[in-house]
Image (cartoon, rainbow, N blue to C red):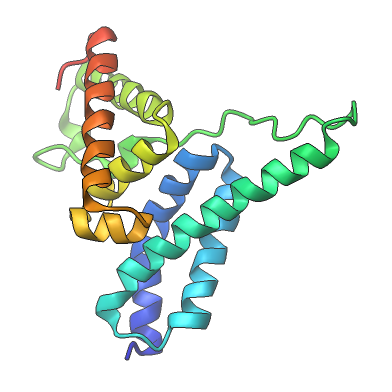
Length: 189
């Protein structure tokens, strides 16, 4: 059984990654914050008594479901208000976040690196970020869980509610698409 402190520590450890993952999906900062907050509340309310080892899988599943619920609400809302001329739906403001804050160079001392190196790294990461956002939703979700959240295939399949084979296929296609797109941009990793 997770103690209150263990649950709190777990939520603190996943909040930034969960926000970025949600932001990749919904492309709206406020909505991403709401989704993460709802996910955390549901985990605490319904599963706070579970063992700490089970929390990561439960949270990933809850986060995925909250994201899907958000899209369903948006679809319903847009269908209801589509005839209103003054309603424009979700006009995204180009919500961005900087992957550099999560990237640390091999020596961890970015201040000592040249401005040119930092600029090249920033451009590379912006290119990668743009291409990840362009992936189909299921590919993006599988890719982020596997390579961002570092979940294994079985955990990803359980969180996404699909088979392990589907996860492998989604990841393979995402990697192929990203590789081609980045190569076209002149980015080599």
